[in-house]
Image (cartoon, rainbow, N blue to C red; front, side, top):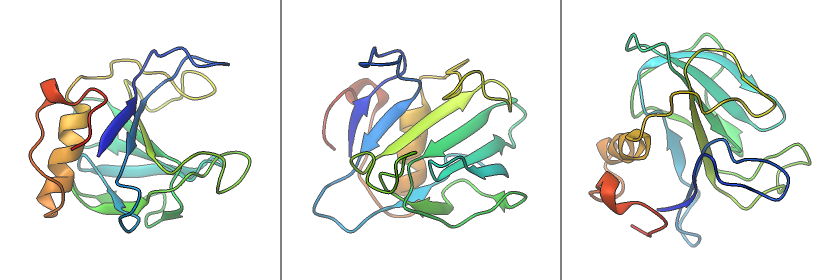
Length: 153
């Protein structure tokens, strides 16, 4: 896995609102796993996105974007480590709008703060949490938050 985008980065036409995680290009398309227990409150948006309200009492909403296939629908209750879709490059211009990656955001409330949402109270452990969920399913290797910036694991 490699982290290729961080919240707050200036892009050519916007400020990046989330984290981008790229997986090994020659491996089978990985399943995207939920980083938390929660309820799916929305899907789609032309980005093959899944929006999950966390069940841990933090009033956080986790948004996963650009999947090629979704395994969940609004109203589903999901658990940490549960597959919710397959990595992809879906965007408003179709399935190959972006190189395949997971774009993930954490919002402080269940509402979007702008056209791509607001990073709000993005907590720094999200990448570690995501990788822990991935490892829980027997995939990946040990990661430390202090090591993740733009490195391959």
